[in-house]
Amino acid sequence: MRVLIISSMFPDKDNRCICDIFVKEQVKALSKYLDEIYVISPVSVWRRLKSNVDFRDYSIGDNVRVYFPTYVNFPPKGFLRYLWIKSEVKSILGVIKKEGLEFNVIHAHYSWPSGAVAVKLKEMFNVPVVITEHTHITLKQRIKKNDKILKWTWKNTDALIRVNKKDIQLIKDFCPSLRVYHIPNGYNPNRISPIPKDKARSKLGLSENEKILFNLAKLYPYKGHKYLIEAMFKVVKYRNDVVCFIGGEGPLKKELQQQINQLGLQEHVRLLGFVPDKELSLWMNAADLFVLPSLSEGNPTVMFEALGVGLPFVGTAVGGVPEVITSEDYGLLCPPADPECLAEKILIALEKEWDREKIRKYAEQFTWENIAKKILKVYETLWGEFDG
Image 1 (cartoon, rainbow, N blue to C red):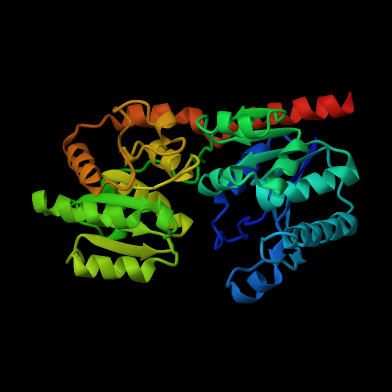
Image 2 (tube, rainbow, N blue to C red):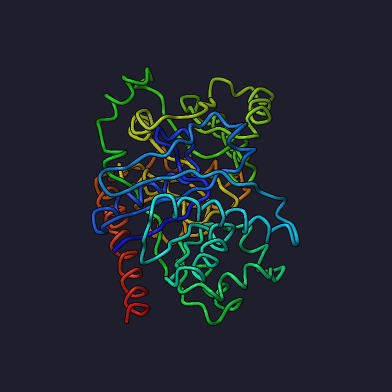
């Protein structure tokens, strides 16, 4: 079976662009079971000019090829969205024609724009389309607005994969004819593997006597970093040995640093910026807790990565998080935008005796290997229906 993957923010070869890193890890796992995978990730002219990412085509192993064609995007409003779809389709068709690509299934990540583009390609190639919907805030906004393109996309999609169970009924109410599967995100145990905490701390130059919290997320408002910083202000009143390291880039970096400075937390909250893969495993293993204060989530990959090394999770009960943190043996949850409760949970978690091996074993069900097998069944079902 040959599959065409459409992902608008697929990572470059060196993972400098990490927005859809979970898609890349999923593709790697799927490649073990498929003959060929073609990943096409259209890059807008503006992004190609302004970004420091190296958007050159590359291969992953023997049977995955990644392409970054250029297209002209438009403001995603009104009729201009149709021009956007047309422009992306044209760029993808250029790759398909030039490389002579043939495929049995199209798998798009996100309904907009990749899903809409996939549906147009379906009209031309007569192959089934499956979309994985990862969004959370924008998904609900578009359903509330009765978005015409979203409804058209889903009506012409053969199946949709939702990463959490919570929103499936909402999706079905909006588009009753749509076939929906629940398949969560996962993690690659080879990318972030367990190592002794003292060894990880030594390599990072961290003290063995401090309690370390780790967060990894884009510095965007919905990730809730300001509430984590507020919570840390409360935590350090009770414990002076706690340091929270926040990894990730984003537009709120300056604002968050100002908040840290205003609260006098320079010794207790530190912004790391971009964390490369080779260091991420060290941070996950060096920490005592992983903290994710998001206001909204689909099904965060970093949660699985933390659990995969036996790291306890403290975070907010949003999206698919409560569907994974089903027991206080794996982590503690609180409402979003509640720094008081978040601080309380952090303090409780720091005192708790965690069975890290139990956490790690629990996470094994979410390896990309296991998730890929579930996705493969969807492909086989759709291909069988079309082929038959």
